Length: 215
Length: 215
Image 1 (cartoon, helix red, strand yellow):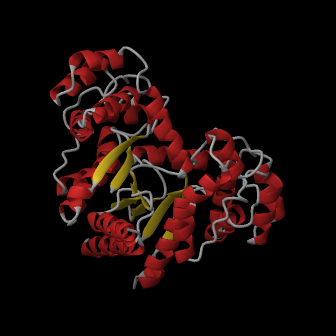
Image 2 (cartoon, chains in turn blue, red):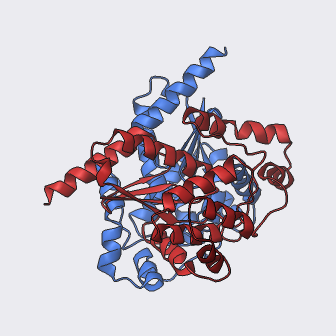
């Protein structure tokens, strides 16, 4: 059975939803038979490759609030992260365009390394303050999870896998995805948003049951 | 206590989330002390005022699938709608730009009629096949819920309330909203996505408890 997850690597709710899905899978008796497929979704396709400064700088400049206010607004997400062991450091985060990150995730999927790369990209962006749109950074993170350097550089230097990113995004429109994360269980059931583990577990179970019903 | 809901009137997951919130409020002992505040969010700010044809026509043209495939893809949402008494008729839906609808919702809020107008807009778009971006249609729906015709026409003929729509959308960026519906309970707790009624009820309860703790 597959679980498809539309997500963006700069989306904190996606990172939380990922953690909730891991909790759900840990509690699901058939998790060995579940394949998680990462599907591309860009929250801001028009974002520049790299933005000046950090996410907090950006919000301060754009919204005219002071740093403390932005910090408090992010407090809800930070607190949720704490509960599931995710260390959100928005004051350090360096936003940018995520199209190349998604292209590399498709390369990684062809080598069974997409889950590892997704984890690495999330940690790089949310915790380590790495610039998510910088090709040299992306190359480094891809090599760390075991991808081949020549292949990675060839992808970054071309438009390889662009059509797979676009295809995922077109399917999101078909499914009327109104935001991410967005979970689809076995193409039967969907869950929109960072739903808690018990809801995702119920989705897994329900999709599994309706699957075996038809055997 | 307030519950803020960022939503768009053409977003089926928002319509479902609205139904789940109503269920949660029906089960919440302090629901009389809860004010629901609708906050503006445009899924597609660049959408033309009115699009040719129906949502299904649009998806068929854009994605190269046949009508039956699109129908099946929408089946998940339609089934969820059935469970909560929402009649989604995507084959009839006539998409368009929702900026004017959001401006009218702010006018309605000033008269305590925003909940009624939200319901009316959802029904008009999802069930009755009314063109959501058409000023004459919007005027009609606004009058039906009791707004004053002169006021409605003055808003539609000007840019009144545009700044309130933009303010809501700026706040969504501050809160790193990655999609809609997005619920914020008493500015303390957030829930991203069409979370089920029991999750929203838990959010209401938790926000309420932490509120009374501080009295």
